[in-house]
Amino acid sequence: MSVSIHFNNVIKKYDNTTVIPGLSFDIKEGEFFTLLGPSGCGKTTLLRMIAGFNSIEGGEIAFDDRVINKIIPQRRNIGMVFQNYAIFPHLSVANNVAFGLKNRNMANEEIGKRVDKMLDVVQMTKFKKSMPENLSGGQQQRIALARAIVIEPSVLLMDEPLSNLDAKLRVDMREAIKDIQRNVGITTVYVTHDQEEALAVSDRIAVMNEGEIQQIGTPRAIYQRPANTFVANFIGRTNIIERTIVYRDNKYLLVMDEQYEVIIENLKKSFDKQDTKVKLSIRPEEFVINDNKNGMRAIIKGNMFLGMNIHYIVELQNGEQVEVIQESMIEEPLKPGKIIYLGVKQNKINIFDFKSEVNVLKDDLL
Ligand code: ADP
Image (cartoon, rainbow, N blue to C red; front, top):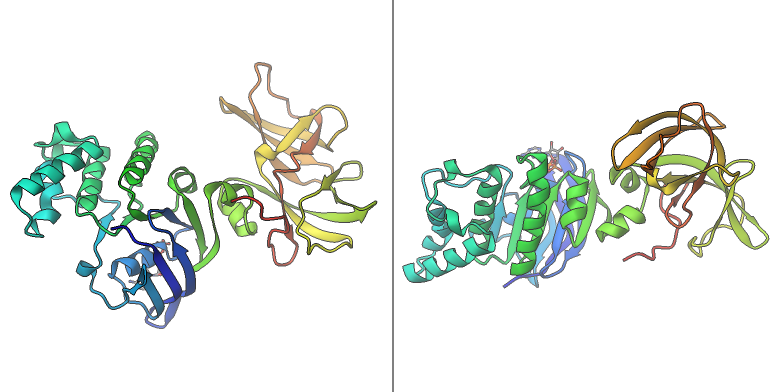
């Protein structure tokens, strides 16, 4: 039976160093939930606390309403998949998958049935009798996944399971993992530092920094309405620039330069009616290059053709440089020295309080 997971003011210390100062959040039953953040932010530490391999220095972790702080790892009914597969080299594929079941004294016939079913789920049936050394990294990881799921754990924990695979396989395995998780419906906590992978597989993502959660949301909310400038910078690429919002004729206008102003209609109600300095996050694809005067006057400084897209370095009148991405056209890219007008897609850009760097736009995305 899958469970929900509850963190209530959870604290982790290694000796006198606090690495998680107090986390409170919930993971829903059956959810694919990802911990995402830079190296050293505490993702693996938290995962190991769920598994029972790390002590908990304060607060509570509960599966449904059962506090698990003091329950030994073997009794938490958890499946784990690691970066380095950790499958047994001397056992066949079938025996690797059967391993956890044999430990539970299950009848051989039942074990056989479950192993066959699980090999089918991870699409490895025809490798049933193979030895691990004859399998590719992706296939070994499917076996590791099968072995973790076959015991029907309450929670599946995965720590950077794809980071040893090459780039193409990593993308293929994302889909496999997501499909398998959806089929079996186990509450899954997934750790990665790869933001695109997190966006691809997760129902919800928690973005962490220095042991604290910066934002929890769907991939779309995290990317399109980052809660603060840390999240905006960490997920995807962005340009952070400073501008002013003025209140004129009952409207909020974002002053981009002397001639280009953008009406902003989705500010939070609490936003001040006075002229206010703000920070903007404008992703490279949120700019539009115009040749009429609808935009900031700017000059192309460099271009790079990348197949589907063209990346431009563009200099604004005040000397700021921004990165702009446009879909490739059949025509030649714009050349350095070309004067352009740089507009923004106003519903896509994000605006942050100058000091707290917290988003001031309505949080209307799920
Ligand atoms: P992440 O998984 O996000 O890369 P970790 O959870 O591995 O981060 O580490 C979080 C912090 O805790 C880091 O500063 C790391 O150096 C520290 N840390 C991790 N494990 C230990 C340990 N066993 N003893 C002391 N400090 C540790």
